[in-house]
Length: 582
Image (cartoon, rainbow, N blue to C red; front, side, top):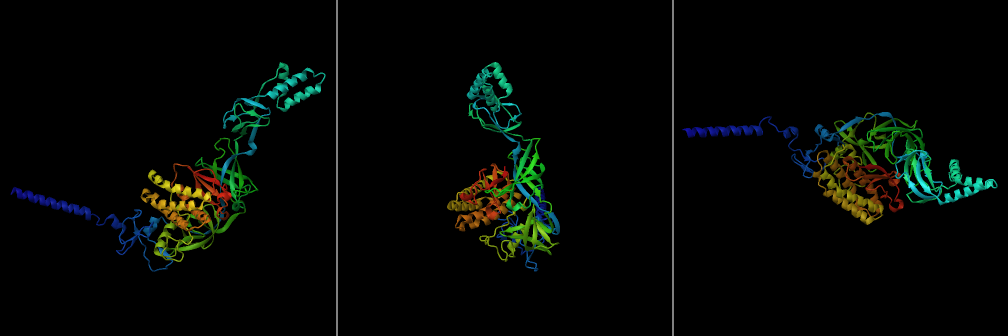
């Protein structure tokens, strides 16, 4: 009897435990979180990856290529085939935002890059008026401050000894030959020997064999030209001395910008080494001559530097407002983030009803972070200013007219008819940080890029094309799982952009063709590095204003030395450093 009761209790306990487990697994709210998320999705829905639209599955899950959550493939709701409709959830995931465009007055803003330089009017070459040997140096390194009248060096001069002996001999016969005595004194005065020193020599009746060189001005030693024991000639420069309390900031002005930058224009600028601090100034001079190699002129801003914050050779970035009377009046202005570039075409997405329609626009001048719209948009229309690239990816998948396929139909990612993916796609994504493992995985990619750059600069077509192939292979071999969170979105956008740019390289038959694609590759890599830096090595962004038919083009380098990949030996040194990524 007792055994039977024990068995009955065990059976009841097992039953209760089973019911509890069943309630925990299937009960509660009656729906899992995933079911909530997809409760409005029909059973026939196709699931795809926003970054790999070729992935299509009948049920939700993770993308087998990148691990991202699959999203529903939008269904055609029977409206205008040119209008693509997105669900509210998809718009939130794509972070889509819009603005209603209107006409307004806008002042043209020009971005300029430059360097802090010494004011030429406050730079002095300290020379010696006495020939001889440097016996002592009182100033031994650059950067040292000196005051006017301070002793800089001591010189032993055999010629000065001879000239003093002549003075003493002429002094002895000064009564009978006064002209000879005056000539001897004049010779010493020409060597900057003062009357007091001449009187001292005569009083002692003994030549001085060592003389001191004293500073003619106050300032900072910017260059030291001699060493202890050197023999110097009369007029030879010993030191370069500059007054750094007032400096120049010299900004580069390209030909296309010269009509907008005038003397008297106000400019606001920042210095890379002083983050968070803004300086203001006025352009006091614009060079009337263009540099024959770089094709740029110089705009000068004079700044007060009594606090010593600015140092010569610091990089500066400025924004100058256009001269009075050059205001853009009653024009439609659109943010750069709204524009998708496909070669020579500029594309935007306009809100129409519940969806978005592709629209080609004709752009005018740039206004800082905006563009003037000449045609293609009307006042009052609603334009996508954030998330346009993601919308276009979904439109491509649906077979409608898109950035890469203006006529509609499936996009062939292997052949893009000369058009490239949006050059500002990465600008629409926030800056992220990469793990050390991700940075390590990128090293072969950077190595192949710099190899391609070097071969283009050397006019080496065969090796440049081979480096391009290796760059494409390296890109495909990078494990995308190294990039986590938002970094994953940045990588997927960059990877797609680079694949599109690298694909045509293998078909090119001359080095000029490779160089035309190298510009797109460089632009994408510069954007990626700026979004994901810093890196262990210092990377220089360099610019040639004459590349791309005088529109200018950038590239990356590990060295400050200019080796132009767009012109090679024809103009190897054409260019300058415009940014340093540390």
